[in-house]
Image (cartoon, rainbow, N blue to C red; front, side, top):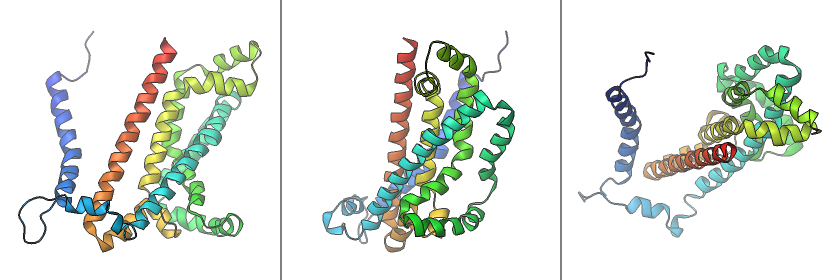
Length: 267
């Protein structure tokens, strides 16, 4: 049977080109942060050392505050995806399959709406949220929960479509399991890959989002980077590289967790 897979040479060429596209900006940014100081010709790590110097802690305090806010936002957003959005998708798949098209349309709608338009619609809502729950950065999780819907929906729905969710749930119910046990012990383990991908995407979106946080006047990592960039462009570049490294490590951890889970499942 003839396959349409590319040849090894083609795969190597594609890999090299794609790798270069991603590597060149990173290398250029690293070289920018190591640029020689005035009056010297050699690359220097002085700016990197200055970032971690305790004497400069006050200068870079907005970065650490923004990073802490972004990480807490990421945790709350992932919790909304896992504990609110995922059960809703499972419920639609099991009990209301006729609503899937409408639900899919609503879930994918935010990707077609510019962030500035979302902010205009969310501003009156956040006015009331501020009066009720305060103006803490964590409240942005409600907006980010809407923002990540199109991406998380595709990841989770692909996992749902890959299994016979109705047969699994009916078999578990026949054996006496309650609906909570069916969801937690039967369905969720089979959706592990999709849930991990949705969690990673949610974290990436939260760490990289700027428009909504800026217009709603909340301090997160991206708004802090803009603030630091006005004072020290080298420090902003360094913190950007550190944020990218953190996201890369997180990707490796989540991917490793998914492989370990799949290995235990198959054993």
